[in-house]
Image (cartoon, rainbow, N blue to C red; front, side, top):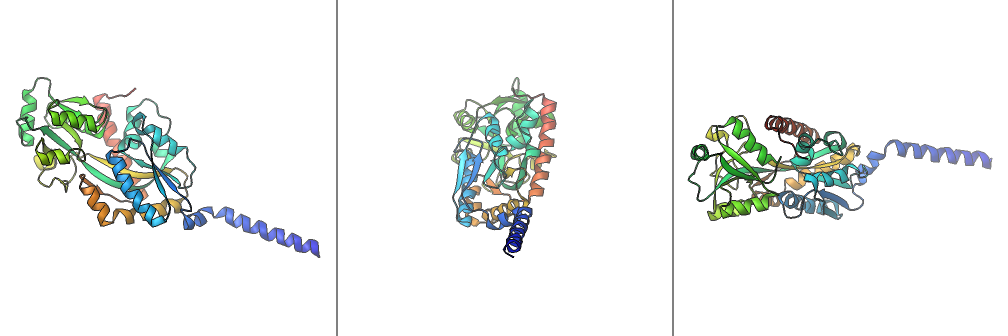
Length: 329
């Protein structure tokens, strides 16, 4: 009798364990997060991606009642930080806050990468979109697109434009414009937006294609002048600056966009739990206001829409990279 009772107990325990093993994501999704969450930013502190990530991370921490740590892991155009997330446990506790470079651009720029961003990272949501701005130093005799094109054509070799680096969305925007918009541009790459902005303000470089965030204060002070924004619509922080389409350059837009991803294989219900909480954070008026002061807009999405967006961005820029023959060793 005792043996049969013991056998029945063992069978019941085994059955319970099997049920638990077959439905781990349901349980984990309901209880997520049960500990601190780490969000890897693959660039140094102080930039637009870091700024955006920290604002959203604070909201998520409040909602979850858990610490959300922002971990800056710069290097190799974002690939060091991205790879650390690819290799992390697939449990939702390590996320990547990405820019275009490490998920859409590098794969077309570098002959070899240590990870496949489309296969080894799972999209969660877009978070923000920042306008790229074509700006000139105050001494340049151009106050609109037509005048800038004219100045560029009078400049031997083309008017120099600063970008945050070779292969950035700003550089690739300039390459597309050079081939399709009748403007004579000469690319001058910098190691980041900060030194590029400093030289543009100081007049060492006559023009730049840069993200709005580092330029806003200097535009408002009159040190530099915005000619156009390259996004589909005008930037809220620069309401008087037209878009490319408004000045007659149609068929192309560019931006600095950011989003959250997890290691591929992270349970679907955890992805959706994070997505839902990110949408709530992005809908917060104070988050929208903080991003707007730097030229950004919140841009939540479903995981599927983010995946489609990343693929479209890769296809657009890969074509420009191939046409311009751009490679990075």
